[in-house]
Amino acid sequence: MEQPTDYVSVADVDVASVTPERAGFILEGRGADKSDYRLGLELEVPLDVRTRSVLGEMLSQCKIRVWRRAAAPKKGKEAASRFGRIDSSASSE
Image (cartoon, rainbow, N blue to C red):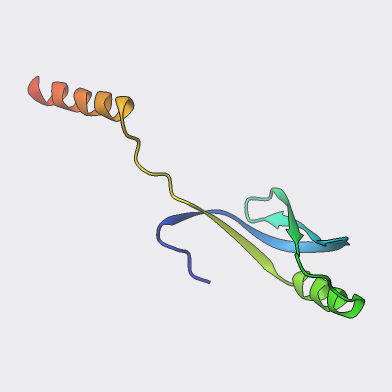
């Protein structure tokens, strides 16, 4: 799976266990950073017992990749002061 260009990777998690819940599943696993992760997956459609079992088995063999949108450059006061320092140091040379 390709990483979107305007997003940063948060976690790559190998799912180790899947626990069925009333309205979905709880997936747990260890990330590439050696941290433990837990993901709640809620489904808005009812599942019969067989479908829930098959879906749980499929999810137990997956890898979860989480990305978040990259932070936008800071604006306003902090950016203005940063540019001010650059200007003042450039004029002293």
